[in-house]
Length: 368
Image (cartoon, rainbow, N blue to C red; front, side, top):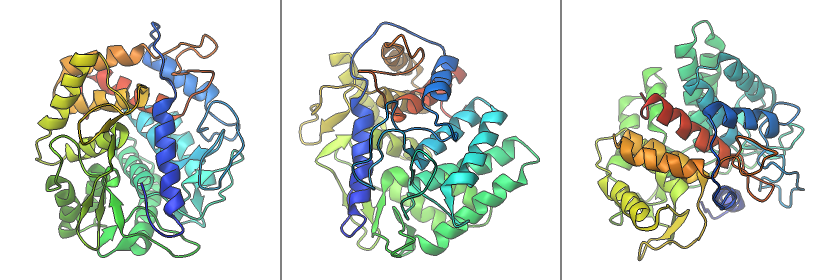
């Protein structure tokens, strides 16, 4: 996640957060727990007094305003938590999430700050497109599931209108917009192309079919290196960019969104199955050039997403193997039952993404 300009550090910071989420929780355990125990761990241990979700279990000072540390909160976490509330049909949790969104994350009544301090203050003036679309999509889905909450749809529409009016470059939404400097990049990270959320905006009349089809085509027609997808799309040149190393969180988010298209995804699924069969695990990052792991850690975040991907591809036997492996990371620290905790600390992603994987596996398949 990299850009030139003053916001370059923002994307670097988000990449570091993803790497941190991959790295924490790298040892194996033999304990298991039900889905509710993961949810309970998050509620009891990863929630600040004001209701925001802390990025880390342990407190730590912020060393840079563009990096999340300690108990600071991310809009990305809120979006995943809202998705979990939808998956479990937990109306109370969704209502609380909406209150957190409107009380703390929405700045100046029109955009979502990507990070908050532990007290709920926004010290940044930028959004993050992928987080915004995830939240907007959740609000639209929540309004569909639970009737009588027109305010959720209204908020989703207001946020979407801000994105469409301020965060577009050459006809595409881009990774962020700085509402202070009015700066925006020329890149669209493919992990941010949330086709279900964009389809929701199409159905609500905020996107036309031609615009939606541009995003659809960016995934349907993107190149690959035989296994892995590109990282980003330049909206000015039309060029796709690869990272030297493939971060599987990014790869699997792209894969899940691409599953909404007609594009075949057998190469990535086959690679993951072969790697799991050969080594008994899936690593957090792989070198594109030779497909070898460049890290020795595993990640509950990766396993959560991989479970959803396998189920989306109707491969429940592989999803079951991934699920079993993921559960070996759960509950190691007796003080935190249900949590994916290692070394007395954990990242919120290493619990939210496994929770979503657990829900998907429990109901029988992604999107079912």
